[in-house]
Image (cartoon, rainbow, N blue to C red; front, top):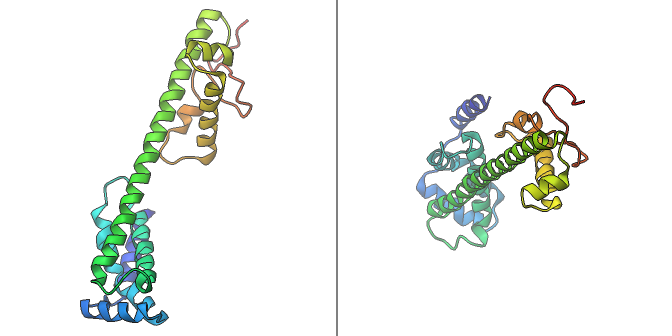
Length: 205
């Protein structure tokens, strides 16, 4: 689907005549003076420039369609800043710098989100392992207090892990294997954040 949108965007872009270097500079001067028409032409005439910047970050964890969107938004912001921050320098360099900053932020944000998901998965896996071990040792399901003691954590920290997993599931995070979080073999995380049911198949006597 993302590829389809991207191809449609490329087709639409073919109908737009790119700005020449000279036109960019003239339009930037007019935009700085408040011309709305100049701003709109500068935005559309530099879309290929934004696309070229977006392609530089392809393969770094963010969908190309999202990169293009970020680049276009940064371009619009650069045009809008003509009357306050441009100060007559090379407009293309000014816009490219703004676009690169936005793209780098998008890549960093995606990477941070991935790390958070990995950390959450790791914590839930540890909780699962400890829960299973305690259940086998005690002959029953462990309480949150017992899990907290075994993991050298507070009850609130255990509840926080469970809360994070619930929130991740409710948000339907795209890059996480939510089935692993919601159907683990030792524990079941519920909205009450205090109930853990066995998934072993049969209730113990």
